[in-house]
Length: 108
Image (cartoon, rainbow, N blue to C red):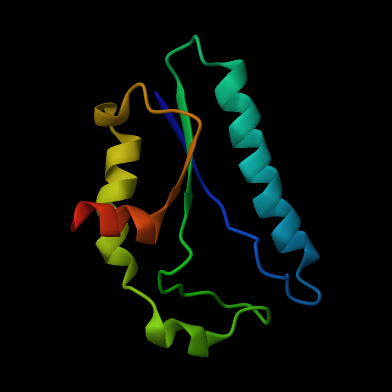
């Protein structure tokens, strides 16, 4: 069984009035990390994906649509989501996958 969350890398400063969004993403990341350790002997794999660097269709006052111009199409990362949701990733747990870094590693 797989548990997969989409989280965000908060190495840059958050946007004004975006605290609820940022807290929710940080909470998912923390929950996933702790859950992975707590249930490591059950065969349930817990991982996260950080979509930074992928185009996003976000309707939010905190997201600058102009940022999408230099980003990759999200369809290119479908294989990462499929892999982590499948039994092919059994045994892979407690990891945070950066979608763009994963794509680069797959394309040599």
